[in-house]
Length: 111
Image 1: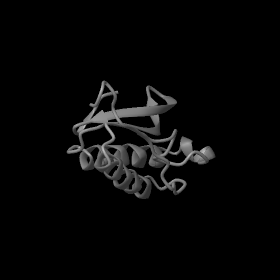
Image 2: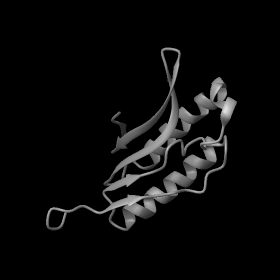
Image 3: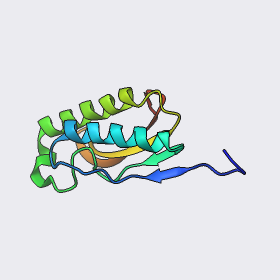
């Protein structure tokens, strides 16, 4: 931190619709690049893990499962970065579907 400021990064990955694995790999790559450039707060777009335009696919359990798996892969792959990271994905809880921003740092899902 310099003079009370931190470097932030708003990162827009090239997203493959309904391909959480590929999107997760791109998020990891770009998060490492942003952190390497000194960013301590890294924010990715809404639904970047699945792509925004999945439509009815958001109701498919397989897509939701793969999105969660991709999120936890991203969390593991970025655990060494000194940054707070946010990434968007669909999240099912108690039978309801939410459009969320996952917050993670140091290998832990914070919220």
